[in-house]
Length: 368
Ligand SMILES: Nc1ncnc2c1ncn2[C@@H]1O[C@H](COP(=O)(O)OP(=O)(O)OP(=O)(O)O)[C@@H](O)[C@H]1O
Ligand SMILES: [Mg+2]
Image (cartoon, rainbow, N blue to C red; front, side):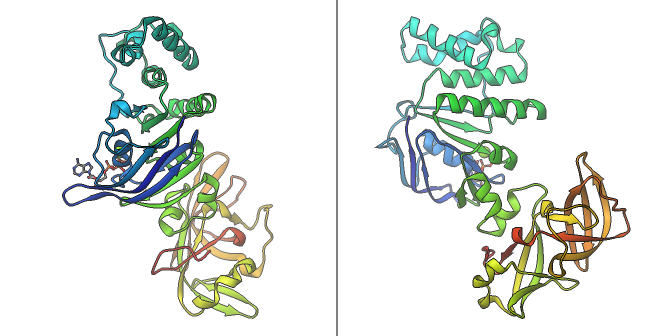
């Protein structure tokens, strides 16, 4: 078991800085997810930890040891890639045993480790089959098994579920979490899928353009994103962003969106004086917008009610996604399926003000 520390890590290719001053303390036994859009430097960061990519600047520690100049095979890590190529001519057992054989692990040990890992993953009955005789999900588990038998200090996983169909992905995701709870091996898991990040990570590190934006537990990232990028990247459908102006309103503050005005939560007043009269961006998640005509967890009040026009409604089963217009603003809301909202008609909606966000349009940083 081991912590992984990244200290001011840089990776420069010719013109691109793929990883830009990344500092991250990954705790012993932690499941850390690196998430971000394509090209943001996730794989590069992981490959530097693995030793497959040279570090341009900065330091990597695994356990107490600086590993910058330690070769991949001596770093005590096991990596699972998106393309987990198994050897087609070997059985599942041989595939899982291969790395141990290379390391000259004694035969009885190999036997025990492979059987134990196979039991853990529920693939005991497949040990004598060849990869060609397995489903995609089974092959995925063999690839995991191959990593587990190594009994590494750290697992590095790069989009290991992306080749699976949607249902199997959800299932394997849950298996991986269970496995992590049981083995407690420090894991760095790369994905571009924010749902995977939210459901799997003890903490999530959100990256963009090689730069770490925020690292925190999933709910903190969701509830308190530090900037517009994180706010928009985490959560589906994405947070609505509305251009507005902040005004003083008696003892409180009002956010003037043109066609409508909502109140700033009283609890945030202390942060707002400097922004009076200035442009701001109001952020509200689709799930925090309610159909006024239904029974809601929040009461209608003057500062939280918005008259909208329903453009399109999409039934999703338990919820309905509404595409709304209010003045110049387009809004997405996910409301209870009981809604009677009809396309082309007016609808009053409520914003759960306590859950709204405000951003500075210049810096894109969160004001609250
Ligand atoms: N060997 C290389 N030479 C030059 N540029 C590279 C090299 N490898 C990666 N890059 C660049 O570094 C940046 C980060 O790439 P990386 O593969 O780490 O992204 P990623 O976050 O894993 O993306 P994806 O989600 O698409 O896998 C990209 O701009 C990429 O083009
Ligand atoms: Mg990648």
